[in-house]
Image (cartoon, rainbow, N blue to C red; front, side, top):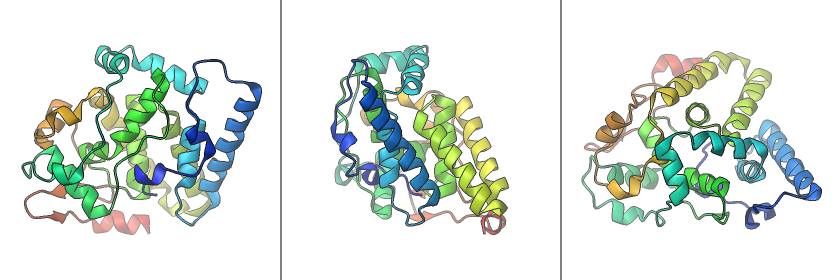
Length: 267
């Protein structure tokens, strides 16, 4: 599952409805619950690789009690509270412009990785008119930067590791739902991969607890800063080897390969 920003855009009609600060009606709550449940089951059984269901599940969780509680907990960290209050959102990332930065910079590494993978940057689906909708938009806008910072790739295993990182940083409802879905699916369909999945979850969880809050960072105001400097400042020890690696070698334009042992364990 490659949880890219562009693939989160879907035909889901709920994505076009701006969130409201007013209490949700019973019908709206039921509709969201139905959409979320349908999306969760689709992810569990559909082997097509389509990520429309991920977008539907993410949208269905906006303005839920779980998300509102997560945002309240986030605001206990001063720098996170500040960026939520400011509702800082950068302009759409211009990948071609970012490629003009030095090769060790976040800008260049991020843009190069996005170009190589054929990913597009996010076009926001939900109007930012509340704290919850702001957090939803901001984490999606910067999702692929989090991949760069942690080193987790966009394979199913790497994505779940990053979701565990999210969950350790703040209680993102989508992260817990995707982890739960992966655990169920792996137990039912690929039990031989369960140990590797649990290790990936544990790794992301531990990294997320140690790291400073990534949601509080204004990456776009320091594109020129080297990735290694960002990682050092944020207490991130990124993945260097293994299946979950998503690190671009900036000087030689090659990717690290997964270790044969872990590849074998994943089947």
